[in-house]
Image (cartoon, rainbow, N blue to C red; front, side, top):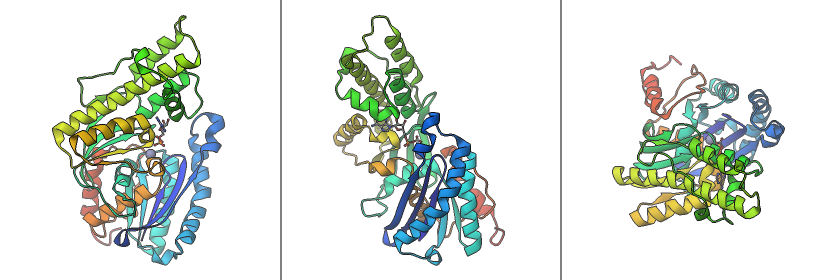
Length: 355
Ligand code: KG4
Ligand code: ZN
C-alpha cells in the first residue's frame, strides 16, 4: 500500500492506494480556498502553515477511512515539485520522517507527472492507459502538450510562451467583470453567447510547439475598453463565447496536429481547465473522428489531489520495483518534466545502504 502526499500549492491531499489489488482505499483533499480568498491569491506562508496543521490529521483520517494501520504502508510517495517551496517542504519533511521511522522507500513525484498519470487510473482503480498517450495538461499554472511513452519518458510537444490556459480564462473573466474563479464563470456566460458576433485572434496558428494567450487577453481588453462597448448581458456573453472559442481552438488545433504527426495510442485531457465542456466536446469530436480513445479523468481528479501522486508512484514502481529516492532529496520549486529522467539516473547511481 502506497501512502501518497500532495502539498505543492493550496490543497493538502492524502491517498492510500494498493496497485496489486487496484484498490484506492482513501483519497482525501482539504482545500484552503477560503483561507486565501480575502487576499485574491495563494499566500505561500499561510499555505505552508495550513499544510503543517492539516497534513498529520489528514493522514490519520486516511488510515481511519481505509481501516488500515501505518504498519501496512509499504512505500511513501510525495510531491517533490514544482510548486511553492515552503509548501512542498511540509509534505516532504513529513514523508521523510515517516519513511525514516518505518524504514520505507520514499518516492519524490513530479506534480505534473501526477496530473498525467491520474488519467491512468480507471474507474475501479486499475492502471488503464495505453502508451504512448498524447496528453493535454491545462491548468491555472500550466499548458503542456506532452507525449507520454511511459513513466519518466516524456516529450514536451508544446508549451505556453506566456499565460497558462486557465490563467487566460481567469484574466479574461476579470476583464468582463465576472466573479472568481473566472474559468467556470466565463464558461457559464459563454453558454448563452454567440462567438460568431465577435472576432478574436487565435495566436501562433503555424507554430505547433507554442501556445500564447496574452494577445487574446489584450484584444479582449481593447474591446471592453472601447467607448462603443455595451456592458449588457448579451455583449458579455458573446465576448465570453468568443474568448472561450479562441482558447479552445488554439488548444484543440495543436493537439490535432500533434496527434496526426505522432500517432498516439490514446489521448488524455487533464488539469483544472479539463472541466471546460466546450474543450471536452471539441477533443471528443476529434478523438471519435480519428478513432483514438480519449481519457477524461473525473473532475475531482483534474484538480490537485493525492490519488494522482499515488498513480504516478505505482507506475514508477511497476517499471522499477522498489525504486526509492532515499532521504536526501530537496524540494524542487521548478522541475520541468524534461528533467525527470535525471531523477531516475540519480537513484540508480546511489549505492544501496547509502540512503
Ligand atoms: O488545476 P487547477 O485546479 O489549479 C491550478 O492550476 O493550480 O486549475 C484551475 C484553473 C483555473 O484557472 C480555473 O479558472 C480553470 O482551471 N477552470 C476552468 C473551468 N473550471 C476550472 N476553465 C475553463 N472552464 C472551466 N469550466
Ligand atoms: Zn496541479
